[in-house]
Amino acid sequence: MPTLITVRRAQEEIKRLQDYVDLAENYEADTLEKFIIKEYAFTNSIEEITRILNRRGYTIKGEPIGREYVSAVINGKSSDELHRMLKSGYLKRTKHSRCVSTDSIGYKNNDH
Image 1 (cartoon, one colour):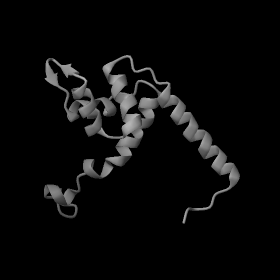
Image 2 (image 1 turned 30 degrees about the vertical axis):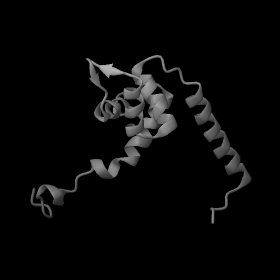
Image 3 (image 1 turned 45 degrees about the horizontal axis):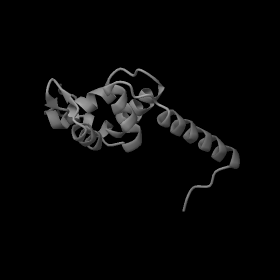
């Protein structure tokens, strides 16, 4: 069952979401990096973006584009509002895989 919210809060959420949709739909993807940002807004999938780029024949120095490049673009310095929003969401989403516990690298307790 969904959580109940006030009408005012629902209206604010609708506006926030509509602003995001407008930003993504009107985003001018005039460079490869901006194309990646725009596609990530629509797919939320690095693998899907990599497939799209390679299916369309994009290359870097004659080589197919890999997921590392797409990830690096998303994690790179934010160039605009959409990029900032997506990078923030990506970092939150991948935090668990980027954090290494001290136990996994051989530290125990505070014996560093």
